[in-house]
Image (cartoon, rainbow, N blue to C red; front, side):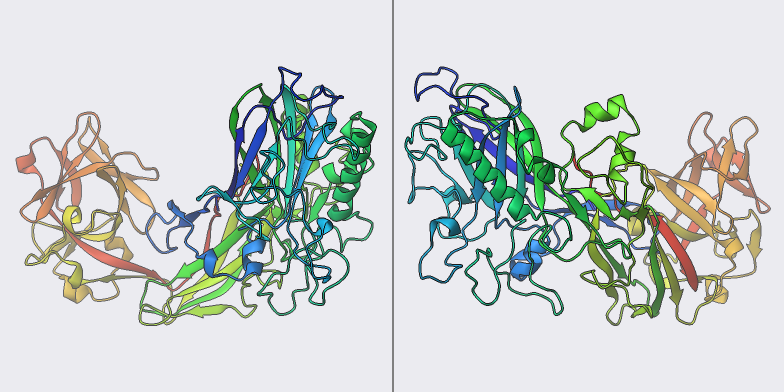
Length: 614
């Protein structure tokens, strides 16, 4: 699964920063350093990395496709769990010259959540647009494709916030022109978090409970906000309200202060996300989206792109049965380094410097099961990474404890085996693996079957360049259908394709592996490959892929030529492969495809790359 990023398009005009100024500012219009900021935050499409079918040749190959789902048809609960929209967005702005908090925006529209018949100020966040304007300020949910604000929306896939120097939003109660949010030239830090607030209760409560999500699965309780169900942890709702209140006290006093001295600074910066300690998967809840980004803002127009990040990785595994037989899946497991049980909500903005000074920093901090909160330097508890349990109930789709059966091509030949969320791993070299225990009905061991339907029309032979042009398993016949050259360089005499039937000896099967326009030639049974010796014209089997061979059509078959220094053609001499400089002395070989089936198999392969927050 590829990391999904929420792109934040920032269009900065004349003054700005989302982590703002740190001292008493000049009166409007008096500073040539003034900056205006309009910041658009967008949720982009999702790219998915797909692996090939397990039984296809070279199954480790994969490809990237655009989002294969249709989130517009999902319930609002499904969408918010997958991070497909924002319903509350909070952004704090810090002036990096002294780390003073100099501004914030808190975007939400809860409607009449207290049931008094009107939308009160506390039910509407920092909201301003063409209908509720403060000068040119624009703050609220936003339709980016049509470039219009959404004054009545309670959620959206984009937001717009602004810091306009001459029109500060948060100012002294007695003086609208006096504010800490009048930003100037400098470096600022933007700290953003979306989708953390409680969900509205079914029964309308006097307390502000946000919006309500449709489509909850049975047994899933209402979302009470980050930290609300964790003993001893201050909920993010209380943290945000405390910081906002303390900032407004600074605004009234007319002097900004160091953000690190705020009462709830550490609670926010070192907030910890938890997964299930037994199942190693995340609880079904709205996906938090976060960002910590430093920017330099110059006077005049600024235009930049920022990125929000998902906090969870979604892992979805689907199996497609491309045979005509019933496929039984008896087990699904993951490697014990696949995920972990705790991580910080925000990545450390000084992470690179810390890691350079202490290479063990990342491992010590981000792999701890019991993180020493508020102190990056300790990390004295044991590493706790593990494997998500495929049968656990936290998943959107869990693997049946009794296994499952996938019908062949004639029936329902695909099934979702696993669909759920895990915490990011933060290791690019952790060799994440999944393992499937598979079994085909009615088969035991490995079987090879020839299929006459795959032959080129009118010849009885097979042309890879026109019919298939891919890697696969083949019988290799020399000169005519009266004999075949086996993968072990022994001639099979007196047989024909029909007499071989559905139980072809593995020793007769060649394996072709495509490499650019040529092929490696291997023996199917023992994973050995042919190597051509240019000095002796000898051909032998070795355990590594060495030479590739070019297949050139000749009378419905192929002349095969080694590639590399002193290239030569292959010829068959009584069942032994030799070299021939002259193509007129080369043997013409005829291919016939065979199908390889395994009765049962424990299949293990690398998992899709995990997300890694920058």
